[in-house]
Image (tube, rainbow, N blue to C red):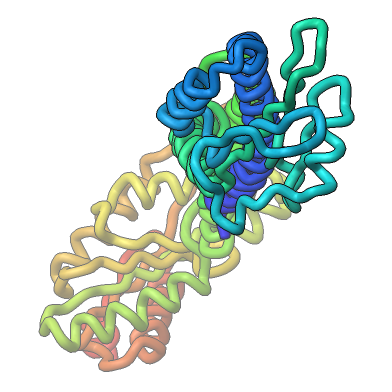
Length: 433
């Protein structure tokens, strides 16, 4: 059960209990007021009759006395009277408003008490309500006693009608108060609480942009402001975290790219390494088998490199290899692949190039190397260098990757045997053999 229903139930129970208590208390008060009112009114009526009755008795005017009884009988409903009797000082009945029925028979003990009393005597019924009221008739001398019997049924009906009116009025007022109270609670308590709960639920679902704006300066309003501040802090933290994650992801991506590049790149020349070249060569063989085109390999070795290292040192030799890589990369297409095969040996994969095209590219490379100046460790151009090259074409000279490399390497070493600084193709090997 939600807080709204629980609060509604609690308020309704409290209002219901308050209403029942209020009705009971008001009814008791009303009964007491009506007791007092009827007693006072009947007492005042009897007191007002005392002088005329005494005068009629002194003058012996019994007809006047009977007229007084008849007038009183006509007004008995106004005073909730059922019977009025007049007794002399000996307790004998002198007159009455008609013959009382047996339920209204006057107890002898009450008559004796009333006649003997100097003032008014009240006899209540079983419910404690005044049933009989006596009043002395005197003008300095006690002439008689008036005794009025109240109509209990009429009194009960009157009480019931007044209780009904009071109850209906109280219930109507209570309903109005309950509706007003519930509307006020809903507006000032429940609606803000529900709004705060909705924002908290959105926060739990990951929507940190939700905000709540409540008027006033009560506890719930302060709670809403605290919740808004928490949402803003969480939003900033989330934004900073996302930025940090994005930065870390970007750094990781760049690091992976560097690692990947390092894994396939030769550290000295910046060219692809031997392992990557082998993978690309196998892939190219498979691709060209599906496409039906040809490609070529150029194997290249720097002439007299060991002697150069011995004379000028390995750092100078490293500069030769680095510059050699730059010359090779600058003289081939972007679609071609240049790699350091090992030591002072390089390999170039020429995609979509037949044997004649490959020989032309090899000659271009040989000529560029021959005409270049290679720098020393201080960056001063001072060395000249040459290279020997071997050319092989797929599928003309070999159907698979490894045999193609081997035959290109054979052509390379044929160039060295023939005096270096030259190009030998597999076709030249076949003609020689």
